[in-house]
Image (cartoon, rainbow over all chains, first blue to last red):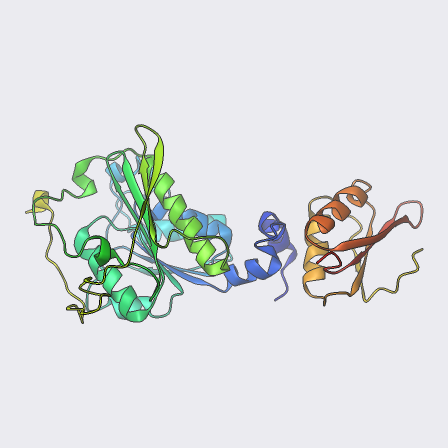
Length: 267
Length: 82
């Protein structure tokens, strides 16, 4: 691949890095990343992925921009209120980097469409805010052998990790089944510090880029836990669970499961 | 002028840092280990910055010369330090 003059300038700070170089930048430009969720985590993550020159960025979100999103979902502006989040996100990416092909999915991810959506992507980023979707994404990535970059936020606390196909634990090794309905307020209602998803979403972009480049140590096998209030990062070792219902020795989950809405406040 | 026989030449007169190194690095990436690149620059600080970065990234700078009133050449061997 020959870079244009504009690309040489745009990606100069990547090309200079020994771990990236022109070859690494080419990998990024020919890579395809799927971002599921265009909200708090998706905004910073997608922004950095776009700026980095990810060749194809798929963005899935059925929702529209609400004024209450703007405190943290930084790629939507006041004028975007009422628009589909994926449209607003696409415009933001286009402003930053015309090299990126943005593919938008204005639909909720579900058992019927998820395999078809993720099949063409190299890396999947879970930037969602609810348990049923997380299980769906984890299971689909396991079945289709896709690397998954996980992130979650709640109030002042954030978590991130990486699940790699057939290497280390999956989300169900950590949480085998969803918590009972009513115990899990969604972020929409729970309150969250606006900066928090910025930190976690940026970490997710960082890990997605490392997976594509094949450099460094990803968070695979480690759960990074961030406490924004005391400003502490801690780490928990994650091991593959032999009794995991999905990736264990005697699995019981063989197809995608749609758990109902667990959010107490919506019911 | 240098006594080295270059396999490739890169004229980046008019470029300033860091793009002098960025373009040199991209040229080196397309070459094979042991091959020699001649880079021509007219930005004087580049004759210090570019060789230093090349050496840091495993290439061997063989020679740096002023070749006329405005231009300099940097002769580098790809992966010469690896």
